[in-house]
Image (cartoon, rainbow, N blue to C red; front, side, top):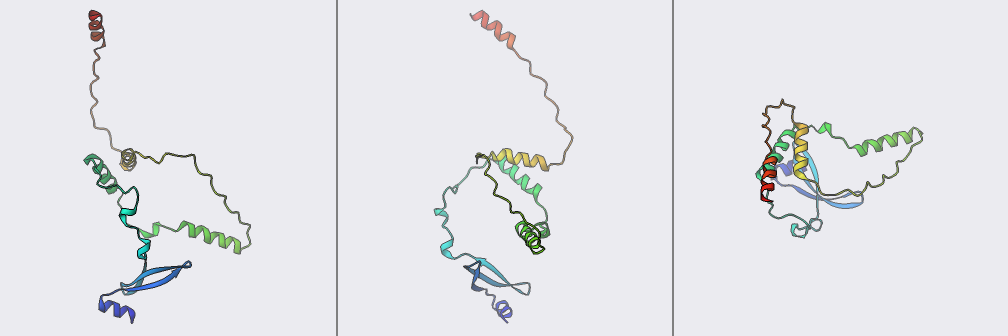
Length: 164
């Protein structure tokens, strides 16, 4: 009845639900003849963009950088296959539960020590270029090598001696 009423009215429902002891808002809507519920945030949980620190304003991007980024996005674009993605935490948890149920001795991993303080600065263009190089199919080199440039060091030395 709710599904039909929402479909005919073209409206959605708003609900309050509890997930892990926390009250949340949710949208209830019709999707392919089923009721679908999606969680949303309360207004006080959403920050105003002006209140978020370090958000860059207008950013100048060189065309070469943009072209490289677009090429990388294009090369990495594939059809979305949901079955490729799994909840690894849940899988490991279920395996642990099964081991405990069967009476096996389980070992809990200790926390890893943080790695040495690494710099947070990344050269974006180098990272993009490296990623492009990884995804490119190897093609034979077709560039011609440049002729070596002749050095004029002897001429400069002679001129320097004359001036001295």
